[in-house]
Image (cartoon, rainbow, N blue to C red):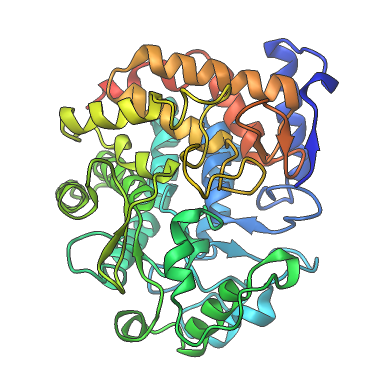
Length: 433
């Protein structure tokens, strides 16, 4: 991973930083979507687009709406919102020839996509736009609501493989945190997988093998429940889904729909998170073995996004987040893995580095629970990262140096939101309920 010493970047004030952020987003805009970064990521990633929409919502709502429209344009007829949309002819692996979405009757006929989904953050992004623009966003909410609801219905109908109300990811790519050490054990146990070497673009053979097995099944839901060897209930994925359900419950009346199904789904996810994934902290559950994957990662804080999470569980999570295992050990928030774990690696994606999108989610989670001092500290330290190292893909949690791509879109977009008047700390996100 590429690094840049933090001393090489001159100090910038808030206005200059905001202008730089907008310049990055303008440069990465393709006309229909914002690519995550030039060169390495030349297409549209659904999760990234949700964060870009959140970051642009306050200052550039039309662009934020266009970003979400672009992500939802790839939706399949069964409701699945794919994690990738191929919008240019630029080479990328795995590309359309691997996914073969054009061969599936539910996929868009004229827009190649992947066959996997992404963390369901889109409804929260739509709510963020509506929350800041009210009547001016009503038309957009009415347009987007049926697609957002269909995606949630898809997850409930096809991904509740454990029968508890939680959605299972069937590939590490669906988590958004594909290199997290949380997936090491289920990946190592894949039956019949090739030796786990590095394939094209650095992806492991296991990743490609899993994707092509699902593709060769015809992307059938029945295959996921019966044969697919990777199925994990992830607390971050489900924490975001719960928050998105709460957002849909608030958007439903705006769209002339009933809010109760979304509120009921959120309550079921909450119960299942507590019943199935809590063991002194929230951990992913491997559905193929039935065992919890007890390694502590940043994903374990996903349920903190739930405004209805019991107070004692909130206190436990905050204690861990603030401890020497995470924020208390590093100079910059938030390490993506417990720094005391054997698997911690400050230089490898999702195995140690800090990420702006995770910091933003945790700032919001703290605001939801009225933890203003912690939220303000997270926000300030996150802005310190980008002031010192620029809009990088991720950052060293100890010295703050930039890692991965430069001019990374979600880092620029979420910086805009943190710089806005109050950002996630203005109270509305946590006090409107």
